[in-house]
Structures are given as structure tokens and as C-alpha cells.
Length: 107
Image 1: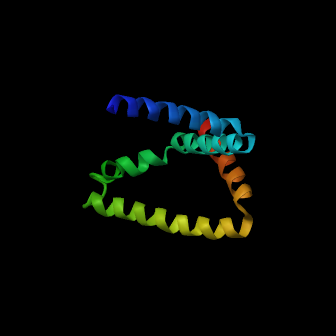
Image 2 (image 1 turned 120 degrees about the horizontal axis):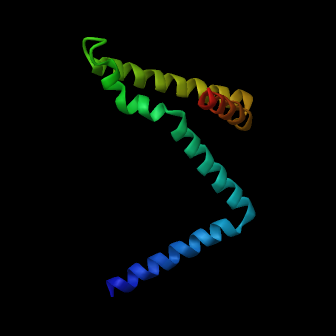
């Protein structure tokens, strides 16, 4: 019986994905979300957060302090982005930031 449940889960997930991409409005939102996530991976900020302790090793006395500062800057920048998003609008902000990421990747 557990095999039947696994097969039913696979069929359910396939039909859910098919249903999600079947609706034109939802398909556009899903593709937009996927493109935004992929572009975030390409911009390289994840490497900064992952390797930040190694970046600061030998440069400052305690690399964990540098990592903490990087995290603090991220929190402050997120708050500033939130305020900017409210004043300029999400679409405008996404278009400008995506353009900036593209130019940075090309250079």
C-alpha cells in the first residue's frame, strides 16, 4: 500500500504542475519567479555570504566579526529596499535591479 501512495503523490504532483502551467496568468507568474531566482544565483551574492568568513580570514583579527557585519549590512539594505519598494513600486525596482545585475554580469 505505501507504493500506491507514492505513485498517487507522483501523479498528483504532475497534474498540479500541469495545472499550474495550464493557466496563462499563473504560468507568467511562475516563470517570472523562476527567472528572478536564477538571476539571484547568477549575481553572486550567495558566494559572499557563504565564503564571508574565508574572505575575512587573515584580513581582520576575528573573521566572524566581518561575517556579522556583512549580515548586518544585508539587514539594513533589506530595510532600505523595503522603503524604496513602497515609494517607487515593485515593478520599477525589479526592472532597474535586474538591468543592473545584467550589466554587472556582462562586465
